[in-house]
Amino acid sequence: MSERDLVGRLFKGIDSQDLESFLACLSDDVFFRFGNAPGVKGKMAVGDTVRAFFESIQAVQHDVIETWEQPGVVICRGQVTYTRHDASTLAVPFANILKLDGGLISEYLIYVDISGLYVSA
Image 1: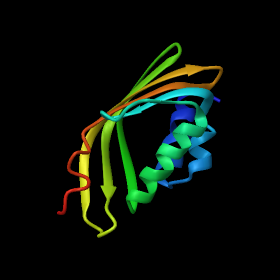
Image 2 (image 1 turned 180 degrees about the vertical axis):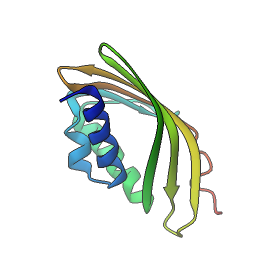
Image 3 (image 1 turned 120 degrees about the vertical axis):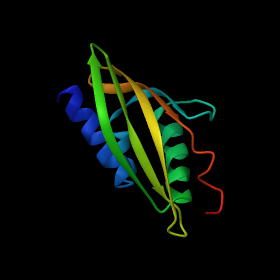
Image 4 (image 1 turned 30 degrees about the horizontal axis):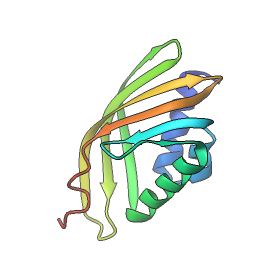
């Protein structure tokens, strides 16, 4: 599978809130940091973190605008739209740095400001 295919599977899993598909893109010892939250290490810890996030929103949709690939690294930027449980939305820019090892993501850094996500619209 190409790096581009892996990134496509990753965002498809996230946007469908399919935790198992998302986790299948990650190495067992992955390091994950979402915005300014503390980083977590290991697929199980990432699964717990992302599961809790999925439960806190109704939906998520990424529009990837650009992707850059270098050996072992994929960087992508775009806009992500979060739908809250009250059906209101928040759209913000994002950038992700994905370090790859053995065809899986070994480091996943998300740069996004979701400070307005849990504020009443």
